[in-house]
Length: 115
Image (cartoon, rainbow, N blue to C red):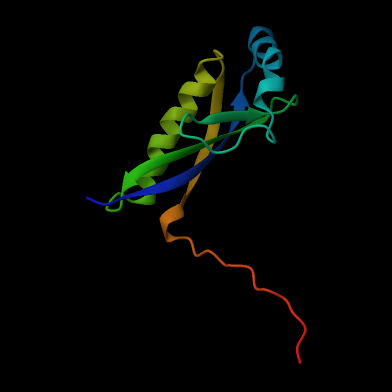
C-alpha cells in the first residue's frame, strides 16, 4: 500500500475550566504559543492566555486508501490526549487534513528584462 504524508490541523475550545485547570494551562502557555509550534510527527498543542480556543498540529502518515476522515479521526484522538493531559475538558473539536503528496509546488519564475 502507498502511504502519503498528511498535515492535520485540529481546532477546539476549552470548556468548564476550573481554577486548577486554568492554572495548569497558564503555567505552560509560553511553551504552547501558536507561532512556536508547527506541524510535527509528535504533534503540538497551541493556545493563548485567553484559554478559549486551542489548536493541535500534527503530521501523520496514512495509506492513500484512507480517507481524510480517517486521518482526521487519528489526529482528533491525539489532540484529545494532549488537552486531557492538562486535566481539562474541551468541545467543538474539528479537524482538516492536507495531503502533502498531492500538493502542487509552484516554482518561482526568474524575472528578467525583456528584450
